Image 1 (spheres, rainbow, N blue to C red):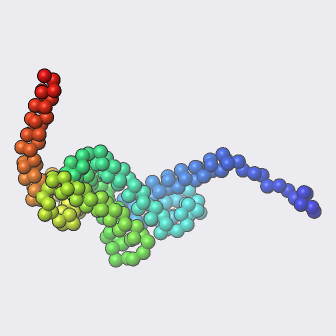
Image 2 (cartoon, rainbow, N blue to C red; image 1 turned 60 degrees about the vertical axis):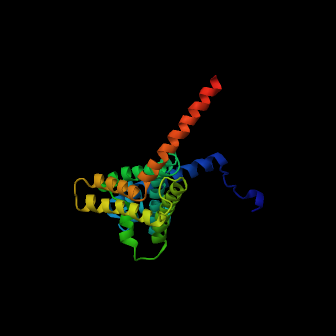
Image 3 (cartoon, rainbow, N blue to C red; image 1 turned 120 degrees about the vertical axis):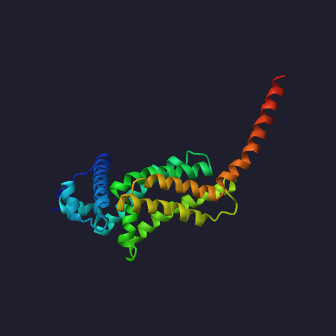
Length: 242
């Protein structure tokens, strides 16, 4: 048989390839979404290809084809959780003014999400319990996500110092530690002990931290300066109209 007599393979158009790729990505996103829902209930360790196949009504081989391993599935869930965490907390807070207003916004959005997770569960907290003493890619992905969020909070605290919103002597790591501690305590008090009023106490705790680090003092000191500046500006405007 000559080369010209060999059967030709049908060529797939770029558009067709794009459609197949898009459908594959949509299927994978749907699997990750279902896996995230499962993980909040049973933990990352409870995830399995079989359980996910049952929930998504797919074959085990179909689910496996998108991830290749249970570990890759767990890491994909962590990345998706982190992406949603940023979308709900970090990015909305960036619209607030730099410094203390942004820090307040971050905590407010964090509390809003936490109030929901009291019922559904937090991957960062449950994952830490499951993988704290188990080195490997899943633990690394969890720790990296939390450290990224901590870096954003630490940077916001540092900017608040630069803006004069809190005392210049504030230790950013200590303040971050205390704020994060409020969220951890809230989960324990509200989710485990079912103590009423836990959310209000966490909010009060945040205000106490701000006062202790001079937020009220710096605001009080800045008020006369701001008023003086506003008066001067008003006088300049009046003169320009004369």
